[in-house]
Image (tube, rainbow, N blue to C red; front, side):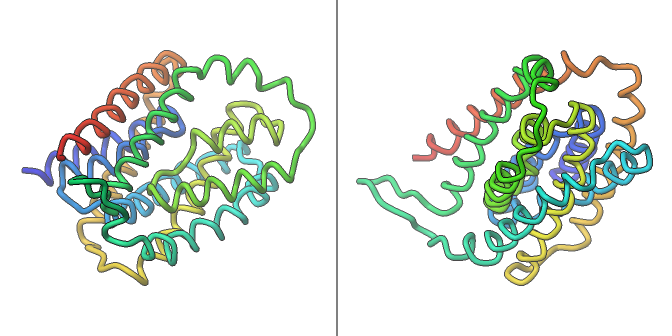
Length: 265
């Protein structure tokens, strides 16, 4: 039963990516942890593969339409790829099972990852809720700021490596503000960046974890089907109110995860 619900969730992940160009990946880890029952470290690894594979499909479609700025994607992706691989290969495995104790409270590795992920969800939700303001600022920046793009790429790479999310809520504003890309082109380019760094990060996990390939490939295939459905429905749905509504949903989910994890103690 859990797997059936999980596979339905995979469809929603892809559907959200297809409709919004991002955001769906933020659902993957909670879905794998709370519905499927996978431990957080493995769930973040699986999320990288699902997000990477699904985003790659969307990126290829965008490239055929000339919507992807390959030069900017490469500048952003190189530091991001290096950071996410090193994070998954060395940093995450190096985190001890029990990080610290305060009285009867124990900050475990799994708890720290889920709390950090929930904080990222809250930040992502704020970015989605304020989507209108981001779009208004899209035309105000005129200079390509490569040092900032490189720095942002490295930061997003580490973030992706820790929580297993694509980081689109950080990638898209960076492409708009520092690369002077229009919003739609930034969304399209972000999918290529997310796909590359997520899949490279997953390579670091293959060397550390036992991967359930049958489940993972099935989950990813359903998510890919969802992105095609989302792309089709995107013709009939206004993106702005949808993204804001999804932002509020992600905010509630983030707060819920923080409460759920802390109430265990």
